Length: 175
Ligand SMILES: Cc1cc2nc3c(=O)[nH]c(=O)nc-3n(C[C@H](O)[C@H](O)[C@H](O)COP(=O)(O)O)c2cc1C
Image (tube, rainbow, N blue to C red):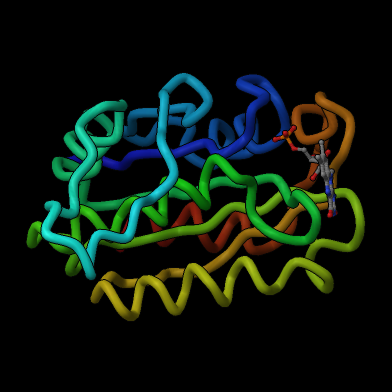
């Protein structure tokens, strides 16, 4: 059982990736970049006779990693004041796993948000969506860390991160 950092940015070495790396430094974890996986859009099969499953992409491979992780750190840059398409599509697809009795319940979820335009004020919808989704799936939403950054090295060059960074790190160390 370990911590899985899921980077929803297409930049594998950008601000979200760096924030996750700094947050989880010295902590046992695995990192995956959603951009490295092929994910189809969700198909809603509820009114059809087809099963709620799509095995033609990498979704089940990703869920194998989610299954063995008790803590998920979801990271996303702000794109048009929401989460990236990569993370949204991945979360949409959780419906397939939910329909197959996947054990989401009790997993701890942390959220990392990086944006350029006042994300702590203008991107609160991301937190709402993730918090409500966690509640629906009976996961334990532990909070959001929001950082303002734009250039690819901005987070790497930050000497000081917001107080939520320290709180989240200590929560991750002593859940
Ligand atoms: C397509 C696109 C849309 C964006 N939309 C927003 C936005 O709505 N609000 C915002 O604060 N930043 C926006 N940004 C800026 C990114 O959130 C910012 O550059 C972030 O640091 C990128 O994180 P990354 O390095 O992890 O990819 C956008 C960037 C791109 C490429």
